[in-house]
Amino acid sequence: MPAEYAFVSVPKQSNNQGLANGKKNVIIVFDFDKTTTYTRDEKGVQVTALAFQQEYKPIGIFVDEGSIDAGDAVGGENYGRGFNHNFKFNHPGDDLAFAEFKANNINASLGVIYVPCDSSKPCKIYGTPCQPLKITKADEVDTNENNRQEVELATDSLTWPVGRIAKNLIPVTDNAEINAFLGLSTGL
Image (tube, rainbow, N blue to C red):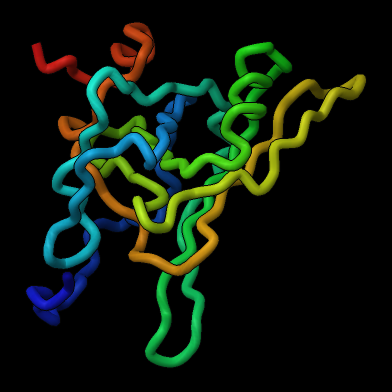
């Protein structure tokens, strides 16, 4: 893939480029086993196509946006380095639908997309078809102070860095309200 990369400068973009990116309180989750198309450009970061099997739609999950902790980390040895992806979040409450999501996806090959509040920032996609995210923690916390689900997903093996994906390439979810909130188009 990276054969087309040109060694170029990475200048300062703004005085505030290190500020945290605000995140919406809904993430998109999908099963990589249901993808029919997933491609990245020749530089290895920009996702250029994402499509799913007919009738399959990703889902949106309500999260505490302040709990999102996501990224990639370098791992491996000389000449075998790559990136591990991770995505952590809390889901407030203990609703049945989320318990069913946990029960039926604990071993699934998942991907996560988040859409930032600032439309000038890129949407990010975590996991790849060959190195999907796996649920590594899905703990219910039910105390006199909190009622939430603490969830962590991570890749098992090394892959490319976290991908960037244009919003118009993100397939709509199964929920019209979530699609409207995230600004996803049905293409109609």
